[in-house]
Length: 113
Length: 114
Image (cartoon, rainbow over all chains, first blue to last red):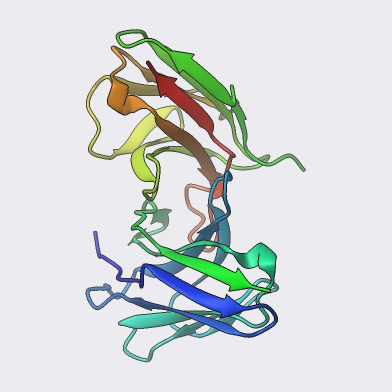
């Protein structure tokens, strides 16, 4: 399975934007880039995913490099509730069926008031 | 719309015993995956069930087995429990052919083996 590399931890101030980087230099042409986050004492929560183009939803934006070897999750205005471990995951596409989520250690985001 | 439901939420077992954990997927989902999460680590994939068959399996011993029922719910069984099996067990549901969709996770079952 293709691997991802993320910083162990990051800090942000409340109401400021946060850019969470992810490197995935061995990504294959059909792998999707998924982001999940895990709040304390909860299961992981889907945030966003993309293939080649940048994506936006109500939670975040995903910026994907042109060569797809890196991506950045953008939280536009961090709140205290965004403090969590963020996982960047490559998900294989088996011609219509889905590969599993292979989690790394993720980035622990701390948000200061 | 209920999400993924797992039971029980907490469980304490003795080494050598057997345990069964249960999962009801999100309405409309047809695939269930199980993960083990040790303290301070990311979730580790155990196996995935679709159409009542194990479709993919991670690097876990045969002591870990599962089942999926016609209503898509699932069970995870662990035999001959070891102290190292103490962890949070997460169930996730999804669409098998849903490339454009994410997984929905439950809040997990905290298993403690003493």
